[in-house]
Every structure is written in C-alpha cells, then in structure tokens.
Amino acid sequence: MFDFFKPILTDFQNPVLYAIPIFALLMGIEIYVNYKDRSDNYSLPDTAASLSMGIGSVVVDLLTKSIAYLAFWALYEQFGFFKSYLEFTVLGWVLLFFFDDFTFYWHHRLSHQVRLLWAAHVNHHSSTHYNLSTALRQSWTEVFYKYIWYLWLPILGFHPIMILAQMSLSLMYQFWIHTKHIKQLPTFVEYIFNTPAHHRVHHAKNIVYLDKNHAGILIIWDRLLGTFQQEDPNEPVEYGITTNINTYNPLRIASHDFVILYRDLRKANLWSVRLKYLFYPPGWSPDGSTQTADQMRATWKQEQERSTKID
Image 1 (cartoon, rainbow, N blue to C red):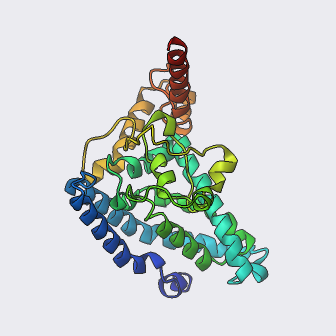
Image 2: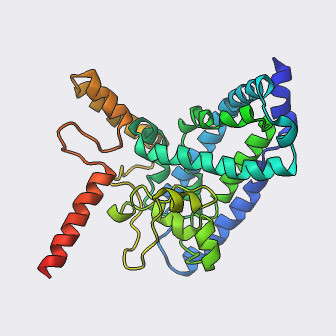
Image 3: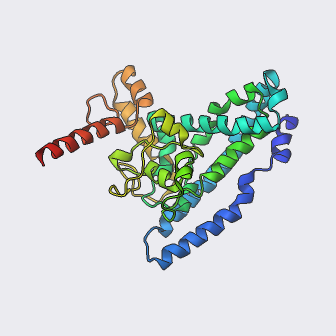
C-alpha cells in the first residue's frame, strides 16, 4: 500500500507549501496599506477565523488528497487512453491547464447551485470583509468531494501528479484576486483572466451580483456560459452572504448551513421535498417563503422596472 502513497508523499512537492511565505508577505503588505489608509478592511477576529479555516482545510486535505491520488492512479493505470501524448509533455500541460480550469468552473458553479454542495462551500463567502486572508477561508468538507469532478482527467491520460500540481497552481492563482486594492487591470487581462474586480463580484451579496463569476483562472468560461457579471462602480459590493452568520467560531462557520439544512429536512414530510432541499438551489422552499438567487434577481428586476416606469 505504501507504494501507492509514495509518489504523493515524495515526488509531489505541493507548490502551495512554497507559496505560504509569499502569501504571508502579501497579507502583511495589505494590512499595512489598510492601516495607512485607516480602512476597516481587516478585523483581527475575522482574520483569525479565516486562518483557522485555512489550517483546518489543509489538515483534512492531507487525507482526502491521498485518497484522491489513489483513485486518480487507479483510473490512470486502468485507462489512461492518451497517456503517451499527455504524460508530462508540453501538449499535456497546456491541455491540462484548460481542462482543469473548466472542471473547476463547473465544480464551483454547482457548489452555488446545489444546496448540499453550498452547505460545504458557503463558509468561503461568510466573511463580511474582503482581503487576502479571506482567500484562506477554505472549507473543511468540500475537500471530501471536490476531487470527484476531476476523475475524468486521469482517464484521459493525465498523470495524477500533473493533476494535483495544476489544482495547486490554480489555488495559488486565486489567492491574489481576494483584494480591494487592485481596481482594474488592462482590458485584455480583464477579458480573459479572473481578476480582483471579477472576483469581488463573486463574493458580493448584492442581488445583481449573486452567483456570478465562478472562474478559477480564466473568466472566459463565465462569459461563454452566461454567468459573467461586470463590477459596476454604481453598485458598490457588499460582502458576505444574504443572511450573515455573525460569528468568528470556526466550528460554526464550517457547519452552520449543514445545521440549517438538517432542520429543513426534518420539517419536510415528503421525500420528494427532502430531495429538493438537498439538490435544488440554496434558498428554495416548497411554500416560497425563501427564494433562490434567480428568484430574488427576478423580483429585483421587476421592482427596478416598476420604479423606472413611475419615475
């Protein structure tokens, strides 16, 4: 059994580990700028909560990543249809960059559109602050299932080490976009890549911004698939979730929506309703007492149109 784990424990040098000093340096610079500008963008309890969530996620991921490696390796050895073309080749790395990013997009998008998955992902959006420490507010439960989305890659013939490395590089890229201090980048960059401006929209609780910009590295997927939303200077971003949880306790941050989901399941009398609570979008309710993001947006648009007619 150790022979299976040996490559991930020795050959795979997680790039994220080497990036930690850079993360710390950038956070220190941002904290200094925050202090110099007398901004309230950092809060010690909030930052401590984000760091605690990040540490917990890393610890849990030590196990889940090892299990994922075993699954990737088994599929790669059993199938690996194009491994001779993809294994550590230039073509392989280029294709993997796009395939990994496209996979992340769908995993991320579904994590906002399926209630059960949202319960695992919501903690990343639970901070009312938006800074580099927010990037570290990672889920403790999402790592149990996120690798499932990537199982098709070893079947194609991408080596498991390549897949894990590219996933780490994507995670590293997404660190720097969690900032208010970078407003707009050159137009061609904003059009192709996920940027702080695009990701601020993603972390907003404004109705017009909800469930938009699910990109990892490339924003082109959102543009092509109808989930892109430009940051509007006339619509300042409000951060957090539609019903803020008002806690810095990591255990509550990690579990609060699972608790709410459990209560919803208990009060449902029919299995069909329970399944809808699990797999319909967050906010769905059988009596319409709560609304999904799409329903809230439709109501908001009707109110905007009504207000425009009155004016």
